Image (tube, rainbow over all chains, first blue to last red; front, side):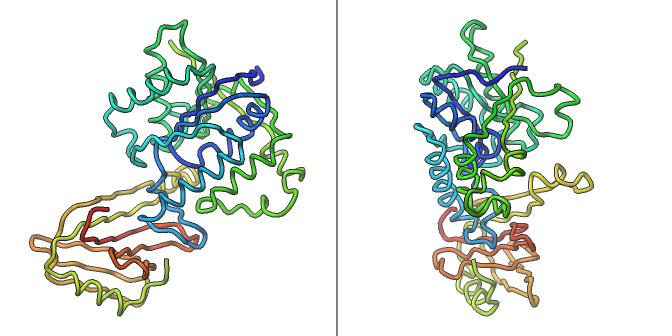
Length: 223
Length: 114
């Protein structure tokens, strides 16, 4: 078991606006306060999402514009310096031209030269876009010579995760960054309506700290 | 999005008869259906920017509504439509949202691609 290292250059690769919010935003806010530079490559605008506000204020045509704004607001709340919208089609990552996808990620990885990459664990992340994004990242990183590979830390939440790949091996106490984390979650207002997070000083409440105060990652093991 | 106004949707359908239109049709249970409840069968399908002409079309029911469009070589059908975007005059955007506000079904027509 390890704590999250004080990385200074972090690359996040996730498919949807809001994928950063629950599992990662506290870690990023903490790293950024300690001087880290974060690049977030977001593959899609989540334009095929079924939730369009509660009640719905967006529609299939207008949803990507709302979600882009929400993502920018979330990044601002976290302090992310560099957001890249990579322009792939929501829901279609597993069907995308793999060479094109891998080339895009390879170019981003070479440009950023990150000390760590954070993505989804392929096969254990429920949504097909999550799994396909994680698979593309580990495929691309796996092509680098072993001594040049940054560690890949993964988010995972399928029900069989612990049974198959064990407990997460990296933990991060983000209790001091819950204000930023909750602001990240609430920025995605077309997607989430979470009563317990609304209202002032919500990050100080015990149940919020217990639920959101630690973030967990699985280090991907390259063969 | 507003609740469907059946009469105004019918007028929009009639206005675009016998024209070349792009269609987006979609139905989804959501990618998390089985994760949230293992008894649920996750399913989704969409087709976007297929080109159609219809010779007749109507909106039926008392809400949620059904729409059927009779095309030269077949049909397009959607059931469960509740909402439309009354402000969008360029496109006809129809959708069915469930009791939690989540999209279940969509039928969209436009003279230009989505």
